[in-house]
Every structure is written in structure tokens, then in C-alpha cells.
Length: 136
Image (cartoon, rainbow, N blue to C red; front, side):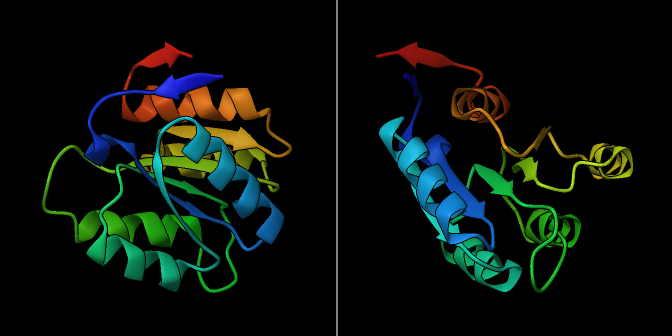
């Protein structure tokens, strides 16, 4: 499995999904690649995490119980004072053409449909955030 590389700040990944199994699997995947990971089951929880612990990447389902990922990403980006910019990766079960276009227009870096191959997800996050993979 590839390993994410660079500094610890670059390895902060916030995963947001209302499905507990998805959160657990993604957390294990990114931790095994060397990332510092936090998980949230709602947009409000994700916003709370991001205030105290600004992530390098947001990996999120598009439609959360309390808000859309579009609203979440915009809110997180609006309060972000530091660079590099927040990278946003959508991993969604509702992968319609309209959703893809909307995500692209909203500045999402990657759009993946569920079920997603875990190696593809890891590579997408690594490419969006770090631009580098190191084989184990």
C-alpha cells in the first residue's frame, strides 16, 4: 500500500460521512498510510474539528444529514486563513452528472463514486494534497 509523505501538517485528513462503516474504513486506510485523521458524522461536527485542527484535505460524502458538502467546503474555506488551500475530495453514493458538475464548479479537487476502490481513494487524496506517494 502506498504511503502519504511530507510534513505532519500536510497529512491531516478530515473524513465526513454519516455511514459509520465508511468512516471506520477510511480512517484505517488513511492512518495506515501515515496520515493524521479525524472523522465526523455531520457537517457541524466537521466544522468544529476544522476550527481547532485545520485539515489539509476534506474527504466527504456530498449529502450529509445537516448540510451538503458544498456548504461545508465553502464554510471551511471561508474561515481558512493559512495556505495551502483546503483540498476537497467528494466520495459519494449520489454520483449524478449534475453532482459532478456542481462539485467541479464548487472547486472540489476530486470526485469519486461509491463504492470506491481504496487504492484509488488513497491515490486521489495523495495527489490532491501532497502530489507524492512513497511505496512501502
